[in-house]
Length: 191
Image (cartoon, rainbow, N blue to C red; front, side, top):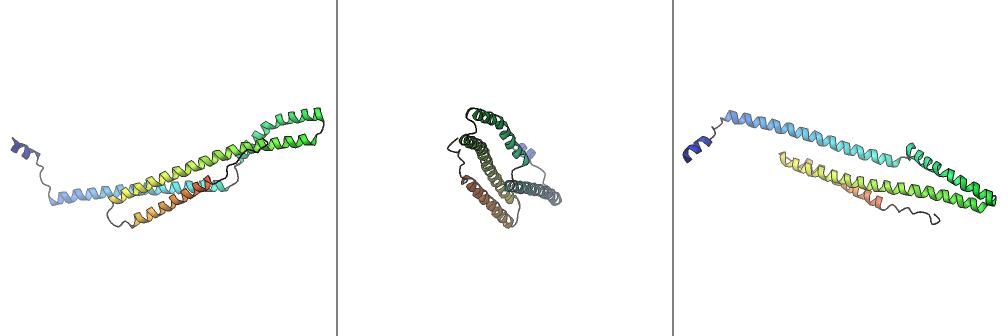
């Protein structure tokens, strides 16, 4: 019975031509897979680079008009209450220059406090983006390393790729370090 089982399990041997044909099919499939993976990596890398450039340029530009409008609206909402206070002060004490200075300082303090919150939120968002960027770069590096094991031949392309990724990671770490060095904005003492 064991002998019959062994005979039933045997596969007929393939001729050299059939083996060659299977190998060629496998090689074609592998080449196609590598080309698709390479194209995806290039697209992903270009998206990351483009995103980084856009973020960098947006940080270099002045605040967007929408942000300026938000600040103006917030100041506009605070203005009626400040005007009421001013009228009450003028009615009870006349035109007192000392009180006017106090009101102006209060208005400036409110604006600084509002901007402080926005700046701190923006800094935290930028720090998180840098951490996400580094995670992406590390994953890309690991993926390319795995891909390099699948591709026969020279690994100089992998070394160059790793150098570029390492430069990007170092730049990201430096940017996050600079973001952490931004002095903390505090509320004015009189607020």
